[in-house]
Length: 204
Image (cartoon, rainbow, N blue to C red):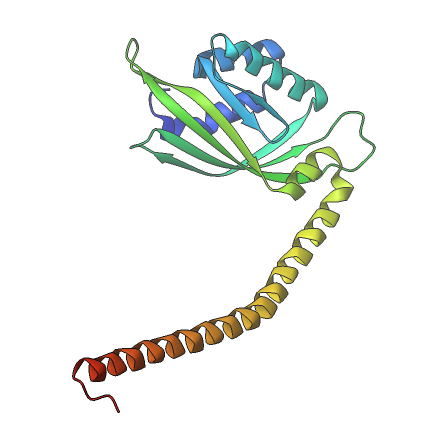
């Protein structure tokens, strides 16, 4: 890439919407470094020599599982200082053997790029796909997505309840510690005063 900030969205579409495996492989070879890494909630490829071939396999299997994928790119942000791109995507992925209705899933793709001095172009050296749990469910078993959302909502309410309950306990402990601290401080002051009287020889 010469200008990642304007080219990243096109690269993503080329990868995901490639008509053939050969076209997809060519896109990967064009934009990924030979030792690029890949990280996804369901699989991971560490950076290393020839790791690009494994990334090809991931994308190939991805296409085999869902021959037809639809995507919308909501936003692209590029951090020039750190050479990091963030692409917000909504995709519809449907496993070809699944009997369930397809459902859209949101994800945030983070790509780290590195400039190759031989041709002054930027290449992807690391791709990280970030999903919410319900969006992972939408990819695999869409009917589970509402259940996952329900569990998360319940956990949120539980956190609020715990904050109130333990907040009261925390306040009580704080008050006790403050009282104990004040008592200790008072005792120290009294002892200091008594010691002062003793040193001045005014003990009864």
